Structures are given as C-alpha cells and as structure tokens.
Image (cartoon, rainbow, N blue to C red; front, side, top):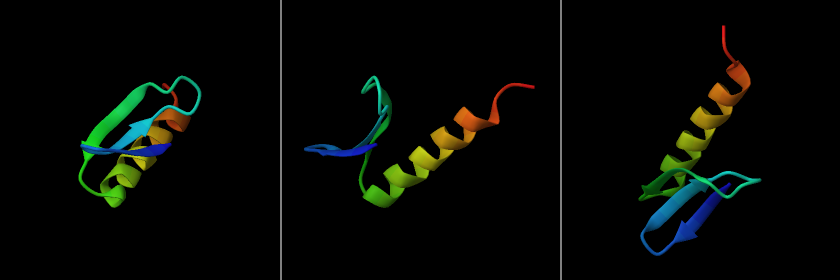
Length: 46
C-alpha cells in the first residue's frame, strides 16, 4: 500500500505495515517501487 506522509510517499506492507520503501517525492515513484516488491514476492527462489 502507498501512504502519504509529510516527507513524501511510503510503500508499506498490507499486513504488517512494515516500511518497504520510501520516501518518494511522487506517487508514481512509490507505485514503481510497489510493482518491484510485488514482482519479487511472486518470483520466488530458484
């Protein structure tokens, strides 16, 4: 999930609310990071 705070946008875990990236100046940058997190979450290990 993407959350707006006073220093910018942050990417947080849906369940644990753990910070997965931030602070980003724009929501678009935060969305890009969220896509990266989702990609590697689903990719798994070899």
